Amino acid sequence: MNILLTGINSFIGCNLGRYLADCGHNVYGTVRNLTKVPSQAKWLKKNFIYELGGPPETFMFNDIDVVVHLIHDFRSGKMNVNIQGTQALYHTAKNIGVQYQIFISSYSAQKEAISEYGKTKYALELFFRKEQGIIIRPGLVLGNGGLFRRMVKLVQNFPVLPIPDGGKGRVPIIDIHTLCKSIVMIIASKLHENKEFNLFHNELISLKYLLQQIRHITKRKMIFINLPSGLLLLPLVFFKKIGIKLPISSDNLKGYIVNKDGGCFSNLKEVFCDVPSLNYMIQTAISDITGTTKNKDSDYFYLPPLF
Image (tube, rainbow, N blue to C red; front, side):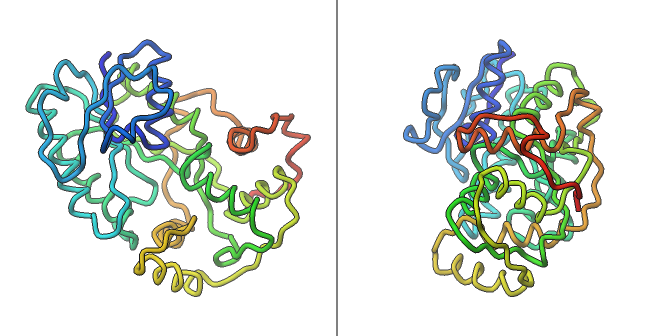
């Protein structure tokens, strides 16, 4: 199949594109500019220059069978640009005759969302649901990129790390390899007729447990300090307003606050029957980041409680 990934230079986009190409598909992508083309992307058939907010060119969708919408402008105040730009891409592809369109949403996409990111994803879910598109809702994606990579780097580089509300909130996780395999299964096996998929391990773990595992695997001697999430949110909001980028943003924390009680069920086993263990997912992702050799679960993991 000919598959177009918008925002192919993203963490998920690069990995998904490579996996689709390995499976024999022709992969096309959009990037903001030529400097954003994924490095060593020999698997990429062709890339198109496109930035949200501009009119999509119809030739990008010629002979395309599936469009996977990954594109997102993370800059503050870009909610309307993200919504309207993604809708414009959808309508242009539909008018050209693309039959299947998949929107990669987020576990943070909820009606009660307080972050700009969560509100944007939720608004686009409503649009894709109305248009009979396919919605994929991953949990926290573990691998060498995105939020999880920043979390690992924080544990590696700081002797003391504050965690919101004691880290008791539950976190849905999926490793990038399992996510890519699941998306390919949805495309190839016509599972998209179900329309919506929550892709994360059926067991949710606490944020504290995840951070403890990162500390243990990276062999770091550092201390976690429990702080109220509201107290942590204030400086993050301030730094965002003055344009200072931090590894963890106010949107990241807002998403955690809203989602910490869990609530959504997982469809992962319906899509991908050979789901790795939680420990394997975490270990593999950290190995991808640090370049360390993976050991057996019993060698790395000693913390029994998941909550």
